[in-house]
Amino acid sequence: MVPVRPENAYQARLLRVLRDGPRSRVELCDAVGLSRSKLTAEVDRLVELGLVESAGPAASRGGRRSSLLRVAGTVRFAGLVVGPDRLTAAVTDGELNVLAELHEPTDVRLGPEPVVARAVELVGKLRADLGLTHLNGIGVGLPGPVAFPQGSPVAPGALPGWHGFPVRDTLGAELECPTLVDNDANVMALGEQHAGIGRAFDDFLYVKLGTAIGCGLVLRGAPHRGATSGAGDIAHLGLADDGPGCACGEAGCLEAYCGDSGLVGAALDAARSGRSPALAERLAGSGTLTMADVARAAAAGDPAVQAVARDAARRLGRVLVGLVSFVNPAIVIIGGAPDGLGHALLAEIRAVVYRRSAPLTTGTMPIVLSDLGERAAVVGAARLISEQVFASD
Image (cartoon, rainbow, N blue to C red; front, side, top):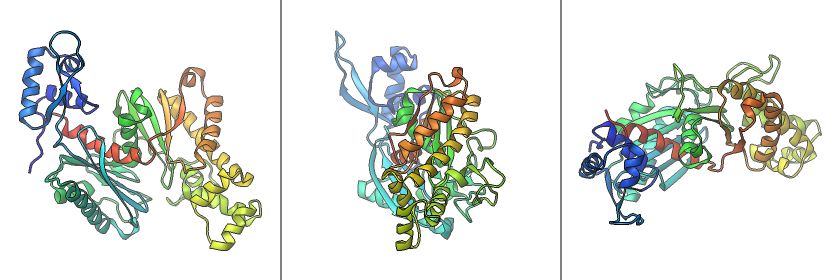
């Protein structure tokens, strides 16, 4: 089944407004700038196409009550997020509310073919569980640089062996629906724009922490990817020539200090040196440390681990000074921080950015933690493909 698309720019604009929730015809006229007769013609055609339906009567404003309209209940999008160690798949309605979601451990080092094949199976299971005959589209987030026009990763450090693999075309052929692929920081920024703190802002930065670090930019209400899809690729900005080794082969990268592996490495040093007796005991018992161990130690008040977190946050803060001075966003949103570490990192980041930035740039700019958590990724992936589907050719 070929997914139906709007036939003109007016219909596309109406669908994007309705993606944010039901509206009355009066509200749609105001939002889209159409006359009542023109709106009626375009809405009637969207109903015929199966993209819009009635949602009951609107609140009375005097006189005859208007009817509410919404995206049709048959519209379904999928969001797929590939992490270094986990696959997440979800199906949403036309307003991007998550209807069903699956998580599964994975090992991206196996290569793209088996991981993508398993992703197809997960989406297929969701479709079967929900009784769906088709999807209107699927959006995908990958943890690394992505050539957006081609839908394929480019030298992704977190995805060894994936360089140039046609993720978009492979998934699109298997699932028989429109498919778009972007890096996960951009996808999470779109999730924040749709359902998170970013809803209130046209210009913001979304900084993604975790195994792979990235930055999504939303400028003038749209994602900014740059000339070759490389905007926001901050993971390997060099902070020190003699710093810790990075997965990219260089030393002193931002990710080597502030990514999960960098934080765990610094915590291992604290354990082995005796500066953190608690982590030393944990290391002796298990033979290794995880990010969860580090977060728990920080939350418990371990001074050595808290010092590690503050050092990483200061380095990230200095990078953000440059970013906010150059871009001048209305807000900075930070996601992906482990439980137990987020507020400690945030406090140090704020201290550095506000102290070292010009008042004109940061005087009214909040720096906050995401309140969507992992949900930002799948919602953002669905938002990504909805932008294409809810657009006229």
